Image (cartoon, rainbow, N blue to C red; front, side, top):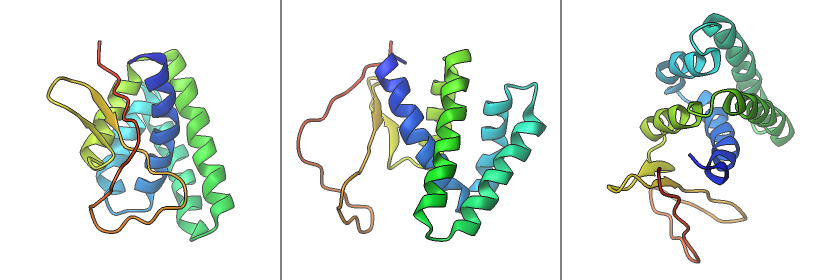
Length: 140
């Protein structure tokens, strides 16, 4: 992954992991994400840290400030992880493509696709209408 895509994975990945923590899918994804953060050496410690973040996410309810704090904590962890292990960005992308395919996917040519919806828009169901420029980052 190139630098720009890694930075987008830090931003989008942290938001998506925090969102995943608030769903039933977390039970399936948590061990894989803990292995990603633990890098096979600190998996149990990473799992415990992620569960602390998850507890705060769940307790936050709709408190945007608490959610923002936990997402920021995940962003910081991802930055450090990707700095030390650049291939971890690919691994996180693959995990999120499985659990959030509407946001993370690859086209048949191997191009990474990250759909980011921001601003004051309303999304209902599975339909999102995108306008403007679409930039693709090709896998090397």
